[in-house]
Length: 360
Image (tube, rainbow, N blue to C red; front, side, top):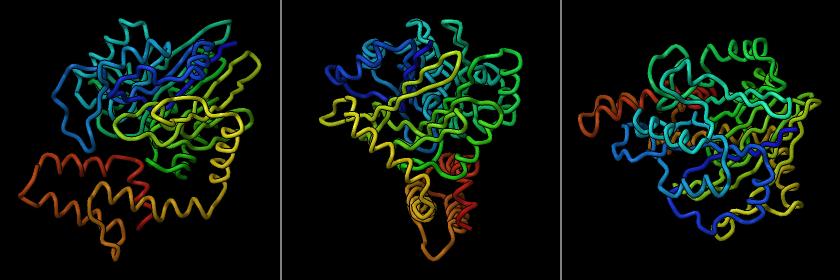
């Protein structure tokens, strides 16, 4: 048997002293592997890249955090790992290697970033891929430059099939970063993508990035956990989060989900009744077509409004984007380079492209 704990987004700007409750510490102490999404580099570089959105990194308290929780694995494929450029990534990798923490999802070039983490213990073999949607720092498999692995790279399907054939793991797991932020249901675009990956032979998909917990799906004993929400995210107040306890045996995968309680800025496990009700409510929303339709109609507009700063309700969102791009690119004021980057972000990011598709 192998027992693994997975949590969502981790970005630390403040002290972790007395912040982790004993209930969480006990859970992590009794696991073979504790895994986090490292949302931002561990770096002394104070020169952020120019990009759409905030530049995030970890402060010096990350060292204590990794020790307290006995972190074994860091996932690096996310939209903030390259916020301080290649030097920030290289520092992060060196730091993790010095602490003997395994990592995957980002590297000096694409071919390496797409290599899964391979774990073998108690005669059980796991292959864990780490991918993210396309944002700042994403690289293709063929790229000879630093960055993180893209979920939508054309090579991903082949890599999964190749891993299954050549390495013969007992289970293939994907830790994925992407989707619409601040909502508690996965958008249809990502649900369909994850279903296709399960059909290819992936046994478990674990999501992050929305900063909200989302429900899960069981497809003939293959699992999709759409989002684990936040674990510690100091850039903004954490909404909610889950800990996924995954148990792998030769016979099957099993799991237990724990809801987190962030009361008084302390991270603890919620009581079991609350967790069961909370997770059931999340699953009910996935199956509520009216609720899902409302996400497309209202939340997408809010997300775009946040990015573009203005929204003409009389126009379709497609026209709003076109007008925004035309206005900003041709406007002599402000940063021309930033406007180009923002335009590229809109054009390349799969979530925003899905937004355009559904709001023509």
